[in-house]
Length: 275
Ligand code: NAP
Image (cartoon, rainbow, N blue to C red; front, side, top):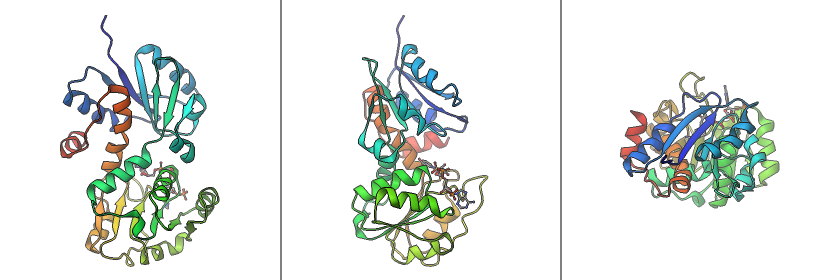
């Protein structure tokens, strides 16, 4: 019997995930015999699932909510960036039985903004981040590594932002949610990492009046692709970047490790995933 490598995305819920479309597109495009499936996994079944998958021909998995933190306990090796972020979204099952954990969300964020705002320089001024959840952690680590001189951080629940400042240091300045719009006066990079503006969620209501023309503005939401947040930023003369490219780029390191070919992120794959 011929076997071919398989990968999966695990989460709960999982039916909304675009990762199967992404990886299946790349497999077909590069003529690689392999498969990529979505698996709904409850917290109770997490450990057994991870232990069983390598024996079933799986070479790795992407991990999404709510398992990104919990999977770290099953890893034999954890990359520096996953350690810093405190969560993993990519596991690789090695032939020797070892499990490697990585976090490629921050990489995906950086690669996306660089691709669609090619002149972007994270060192050029403060970055303003709305939200202090899991995605914000990865983005803060990446921006700090890329030399952002100051990271202004505002979250509805202020103590979560304070906790990130305590962890990642004084380069982070916490701004109260009622004054979140003030961050835009000096920011040269602006990122919405809250779920506000996502289909089915509440609207993003913070005033964007202080946005400066030329600022690079990214919404990591990709459903819808064009959020009201991005439309307002574009009307203010900002360079806007949607969230789909972050999802596409975060998949690159896993695909390369599992299937042996570094895949491209371009218009063709965007359209394939949106179809
Ligand atoms: P999370 O850990 O649950 O964090 C959610 C964030 O949204 C928190 O900061 C939360 O504030 C804020 N929020 C939620 N409802 C709010 C409201 N009504 N008013 C103000 N703030 C509110 O989620 P996550 O994993 O970071 O994901 C956040 C968003 O990013 C989601 O829309 C997700 O789909 C998207 N995302 C995109 C990518 C990509 O590849 N493009 C990757 C990861 C995530 P509190 O702390 O006050 O609750």
